[in-house]
Length: 299
Image 1 (cartoon, helix red, strand yellow):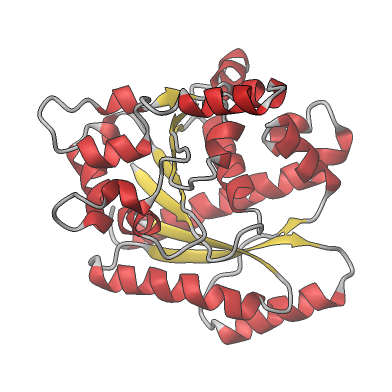
Image 2 (cartoon, rainbow, N blue to C red):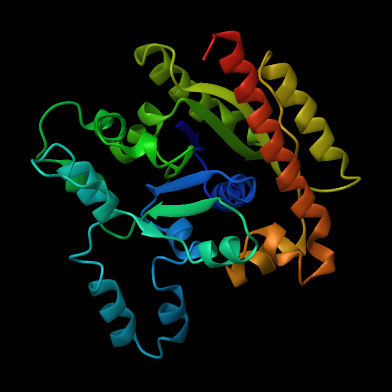
């Protein structure tokens, strides 16, 4: 079971879009994928169909909206998973929900699947405040002590864009880390923080948590600034792999609104084909890099 954290210190760079699309591409390749949503905004959980997105869309009053939120109060999700994993008779399957995308994967004849360990407004550091031990390592310990490795080929972790205990859980649990970033003026400085944090965790964590690359997000064709910043990133972070880029496209926002991965959205919208191919190429590159790393160390 390979664990990959998508980590950044800045919101709005396409982090969750990356999580959802990588998970779907891996599943279409026949892999069993678990998405762990550690972000209290819960956009991955919404996009993957386990957080009542349709009900939120159709809510016509504040009261209805609050009732939907209240329904998560007693649901077992990622915070309860982090709190309960060391209890007697813990069964991790009670905390995991199948994505609605599995119906589409099944119809396509794919043996792959996407399950979700969801988040909500409850996913905050305060929920872990009274726990003993090293709170930052609870997710890692839970994944190691459960039987998840028998059920999943990949775990994709959506970390919050912050330096919280919850975010640290994602880094400590990850074998590999991807850092998405826009190629804008302040990107070089914005990338420093997640790289520094990921490397600190890697040093403390027995070299686990290798950064396998920076993913340029929302780049634009023929925009000199993006090319220049990309070159600056390469010079600043020597030895860091720059992954295949995801270009800015109207289709990305449209697919997100429809809660569809780009490859699925492109089946009905020809304009989405190019960016769908970019997500596919990126995912193949991620797998190739991981295969190369593991082959080199004899895994």
